[in-house]
Image 1 (tube, rainbow, N blue to C red):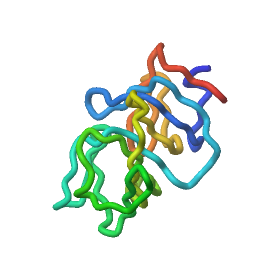
Image 2 (cartoon, helix red, strand yellow):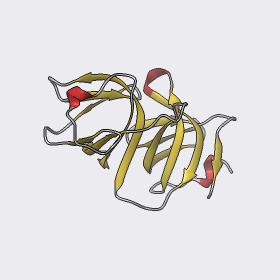
Image 3 (cartoon, one colour):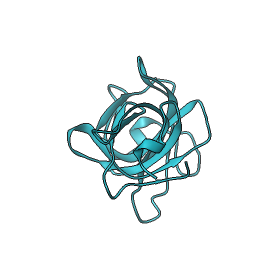
Image 4 (cartoon, helix red, strand yellow):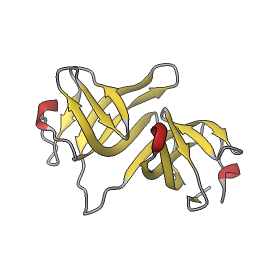
Amino acid sequence: MNLNDLKVGQRVKVKGKPGEGNKFVALEISQKAPKDQAEIEGVLQAIDPGNNSVRILNHEFCLPADLNIQDLQRNSITLGDLKSGELVKLKGKYSQADGLASEKLKMKETMGFMVEELQGTIDKIDPAGKRLDVVGFTVVVNDKTVIEGF
């Protein structure tokens, strides 16, 4: 499978890692069932309780004051309880005009390795540039990227 098998509006899960210039380097892209929520899973790079924001995958996300935040046991916690380096999943609704409207943040078990991922619909595909846009991220595809399930 290759980039030409993907379509704008299709929901995908992209596993990868943050790259230079706010890009996300795709290691694997797979098809997901349609769903309204977008998901961003990654390591907390920074937490700013004063501004109610977090940095994940080299992107800043402003969070609503009443955001549901959960620890590994699914207990409610505050933003101040989180620490840089922890793996989290941020869920919400995404639009190109407004970005991600965060609805839930929960800690994730690392399982000994850090897999960072995006889940959402494809907004744009540039086959010549080997890029696509998912949840406001520019996803870069290379010869090592595995594209499956289409």
